[in-house]
Length: 65
Image (cartoon, rainbow, N blue to C red; front, side, top):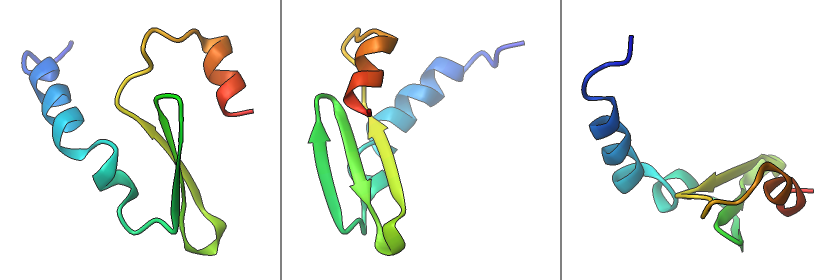
């Protein structure tokens, strides 16, 4: 059963924690379409986005090939 406030919680997460906060401390952040590709110390990587703009799964796969 979906929590009645799930949409509100997701909207709050998206507006407050996505993108910049998720990649704080990264050595580099490369924009790739709506994606942000971050590299952290030790070569660890992270991909984040605020939205995919209706991109298909195939398009997303091309972006991160």
